[in-house]
Image (cartoon, rainbow, N blue to C red; front, top):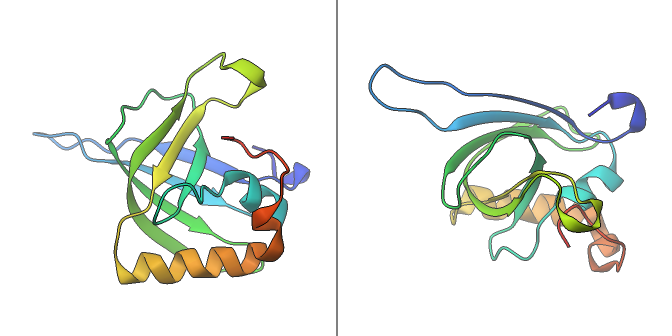
Length: 132
């Protein structure tokens, strides 16, 4: 995604070891609150993020996210799992990608609280997101 649109920038790569495949590493930069709102997935009990990608993933597959939030230069690492898949050519013109479910741990609970603090009252908006 282009930074000129104010949406999130995404890059991904697959690291593979000599004996077993490792989780994908995906980097995201949320420059604006609207992009974070569109990607945030509160329907997961511990939170999660939608990641636009053309790569095929399976539910439960591990993904390592490294992302930054609007107005915050820190990069946050999260080792999550695929909990949502939007396939290519999905109805409603939805963007192809995956929803990455955050793990259940204290560090991630604090990160979810930070995201929800940034989103504020917009989290309860009826405005569509990239998933629902």
